[in-house]
Amino acid sequence: MPNLEELGNVVFAMNPNSAPGPNGAKVLSRRLNLIHQNPMYKGFSMEQKGPQINNLSFANDVIISTSTDRHFMKIIMNTLKEYEHTSDQLINKEKSHFMIPNNTS
Image (tube, rainbow, N blue to C red; front, side, top):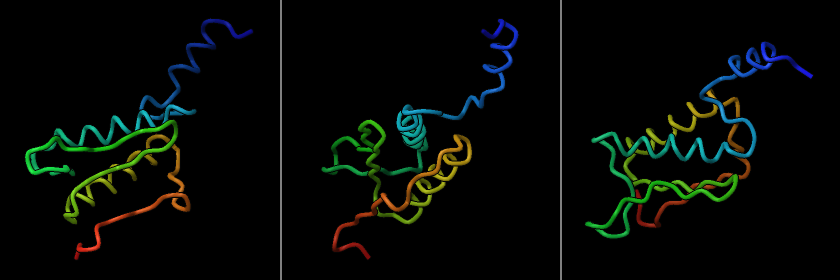
């Protein structure tokens, strides 16, 4: 049984930005939600005046929505790279999909 000092050393040695275990999707979702605080960011919406949809989380799966503007897509990609770096969790690119409307240039 660890003593209080040993337990404290383990807790304080943990990366505060990492998300070990099944809560990784929640941490990623929070990071993606922070993008909306950027006044230059334009997300995806079903209607011109409707609410913007950023992401939906289901257990360990995340669906990310954004506009098709290249700049905004780079913001999403940078957020995903930052998440991988800080959490030490890699996004499985073999199970990931990228979809765009047919009329997108």
